[in-house]
Length: 111
Length: 113
Image 1: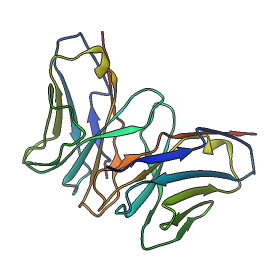
Image 2: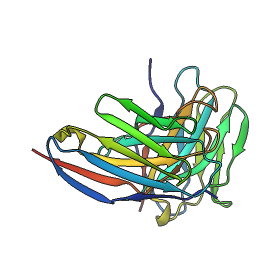
Image 3: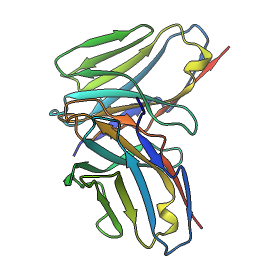
């Protein structure tokens, strides 16, 4: 079955810096890759997603890139702010069905 | 437009009791997914249901766990004879169809004494 690895497990940056989180997946049939942000005690919140027919997608300060050949995808956050501090999860699925999640990255943005 | 509603938010059970977790999907959503999250870990898929059908239960333990999504009413995740290891946050997500993003509820935190 699908396996998703996520790095780093923790990431500390200064406010205004960029943050990059990387994920790799194992199943070449995976075709949908969402990213979720989860604050402590809260629900996972979808922040951006990408399908396998697209190489890059941007939404304001957030962007996701996908390399199907290498089977990895990355989340890029520019001009980080303290409110970006949270745990970020990548996920992969085939046909938008069950999501296989990475282990999460705890992002800390210091003022 | 209410989001995915889960109740209860917190549930405490003693070992051997039954736990029932409820999930009402967003309006117009007919696909429901259940995930389990242990402390400091990612979410693990349990089961995927459509109205009156279980589509994929590959992540759900064969014993003690069951799920349903009846024609009327919420989806129910049922855990019989709970054990300490069942303590976790259980999240439900819904989508309008199987080619749409999943949106999560606030979860049920299950604690087993």
